[in-house]
Image (cartoon, rainbow, N blue to C red; front, side):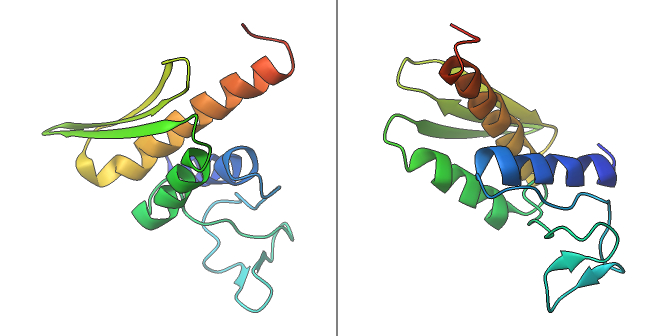
Length: 128
């Protein structure tokens, strides 16, 4: 994924999995970021954490989802691949993959979005 695609994923996680609301994904915000306000100087939105590349931020996603006792989380690190799995109370697995252990945050984010989007559809009566 490109840096912009990763930042867009971060913003989707921020809004959909963390439930915090819209966030900047303008790409790299290092030169357009105001540390005092926490806002992007280009779009004016709050800048979200780097969930897809920072394991500490990604782990907050795991903690948020598994706060609900109906969810379990499994992280499997293989020599050349990382697999993140959120398992719901029905035993359904929502999986994300990454090419290396260092990319575990990406796998966590993909699995989290798969899980929350599926359950959002159920809540709306759009999936079964």
